[in-house]
Image (cartoon, rainbow, N blue to C red; front, side, top):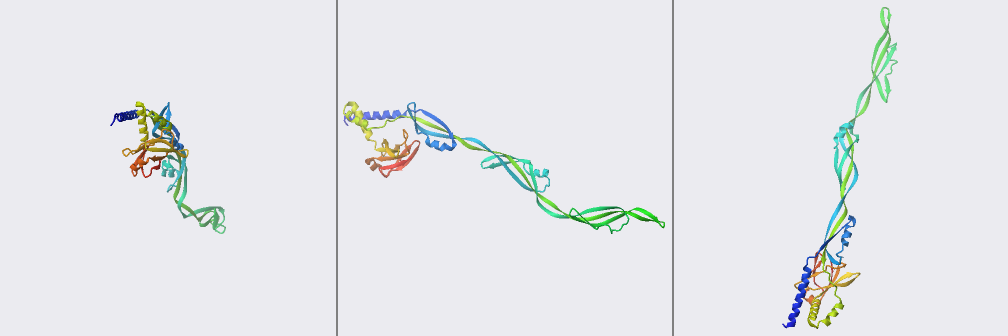
Length: 345
């Protein structure tokens, strides 16, 4: 190996060491927090900037933490409960019901209380019973104890009463032929009838419960985005490439430029991004059989649609093999079957 070649390799090695050192420096990290309405939280998450610039420094998104904040909603709740009981008065019926109830309704929870004043009783089961009823009429100072002028039946309040037991008392007498003869009577006429009544054996008791229920709902979402400082990479332009050629023939400076050309030419992958409806070249990368890896993480705003074009010589070497594509903290595997293909991240 001649001296010129040794010098070239030595300078190239020096350049690679310097590049590695600069990226090894621990970057600064900043955090940005934003509180948004929960209804638009997903839209906001999708819109979080992947790169930002502050104080002239470029930062790359590393992680997003999300916290949903809750609020309490409440509503009035009312319900009734029914039971079959044998109590016939409200004061006794109320004891058949619990004083309170724990309720869950459509996510709302709470305790509702019994309203004692709302108790209602309705007959549930009953039967008809027939029973006797009685009536009596008084007759005073009548001249005869015969029943000719006494009604044998009476109607009162829709019921018919029948004379069953006339009772006479002598109230006045006269002496006739030495004997006391009754001349005045008082009578008590006893009548008997039949009536029917309903005997209730059980009741439907109904009571109302009222109260307030509450539930926790998502109100807002707090996003905390963590950014890491990254070194800006100047875009390559044809103008700079053209300037390199004339300088490559003079001294040590020429050797450095030749090394730059060698490194540039070693990039055997072109990466295009779909911007405003067309694919535009955004960077170049190098793939080898020992390094099947490409970083697609952008330095500025780009879409998630990429088009990859690999060189013919590289395609022959890696066809059928898998290349890993990195996009922020995610990785995607792609099996190489064509020189040109699209990747959606």
